[in-house]
Image 1 (tube, chains in turn green, blue):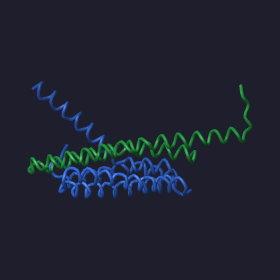
Image 2 (cartoon, rainbow over the protein chains, first blue to last red; image 1 turned 120 degrees about the vertical axis):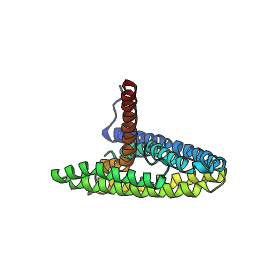
Image 3 (cartoon, rainbow over the protein chains, first blue to last red; image 1 turned 60 degrees about the vertical axis):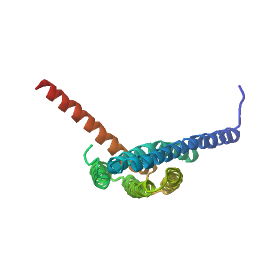
Image 4 (cartoon, each protein chain N blue to C red; image 1 turned 90 degrees about the horizontal axis):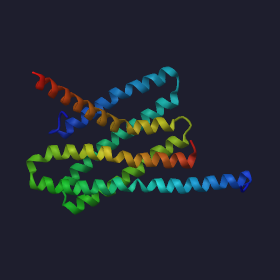
Length: 85
Length: 135
C-alpha cells in the first residue's frame, strides 16, 4: 500500500475530479446532435404535410424540452465535481 | 395530451402548471426560513421559463428553413442554451445567497411537469378504457 501525503492525495483527487467533470460534459453533446436531427426531420415532415404543422411543432417542443434534461444532468454533475458542493 | 394542435396554448398551459406545482417548494422553503433555497429555486424556474419561450421561437424559425439548415440551426441554438444553463448553475454555485441544488431543481421543473402531465394522461386513458370495456 502506497502512502501519500495529504497534499499529494488532495492533488490526485482534484485531478481526477476535473477529468471526470470533462468526461461528464461529453454527455452534453448528445442531445444537441439528436435535437438537430429531429428538427431536420420535422421540417421535411411539415413540407410534406403542412396541415400537420401544429401537432409536429408540439411534439417537437415537448421532445426537445425533455431531451435537453440529460445535458443539464451532466452539467450539474460536472459542477458538483469541480466545486465539491 | 390536451392542446396538441395548438403549441402556443400548450406552452402557456405547461408554464401555468409548472408555476402551480412550484408553489409548494417555494412556500415550504419560505415557511422554513431557507431563503437561499427559495431564491435559487425561483432563479432556476425563471430561467427555465425564458428558455422554454426561446426554444419555442427557435423551433418556429427552424420549421421555415431547409432540412439541413434547420438541423444546424437547432444544434447551434442548443449549444447556446447549454452555455446559458452553465451560466445559471455556475452563478448558483458561486453565490452564497443562491442554493445550487434548488437552482438545478428549478431548471428541471418544466421537464418534471411535462413528464408528470404525460403520466397522468396515460393513467387517465387507461382507466377510461377499462371503464368503457366494463360497460
